[in-house]
Length: 192
Image (cartoon, rainbow, N blue to C red; front, side):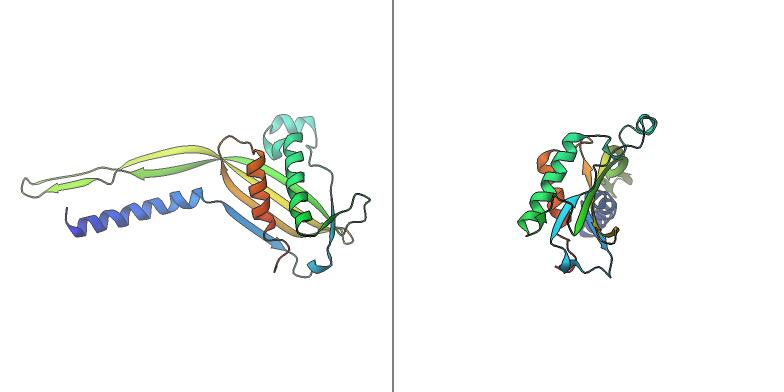
């Protein structure tokens, strides 16, 4: 195979792999109120746990916002509380906190396609040319964890951080939750 053919093969493989690889990446983002003074916040507590509005809503979408999962609730609250305490925030159980926290978890089914076998050969002496390309599509779960920070005095959302990642089985174990929470809260407070 000539150097030109090898280069062409490498470029084609890279172009096809780029969308596939970008679909695998964990994405962490945040947004915040530019008018909020984050330096004034030093204590926190939690809003009520997220629950479904009705049994009818639960039947219509049994996996949506991780319906009434007390294990997940306990793990996320522990991870967030531990992270914020380690950074000097105080947990205020008496309702006197500066900020209130909430979270959301969602899962959605996604499809990813991948191509392979860019093998081709040319036998110019024999006058033949062959090429091959295989395409496959796989389904996976994509999970999103959102953490909200609400200014208690204004009762307004002042910061939101979220992480979108591939999830094997539509569940999060303790290690995955700790990793996700630490990556999300690394962006809080903004400008830190």
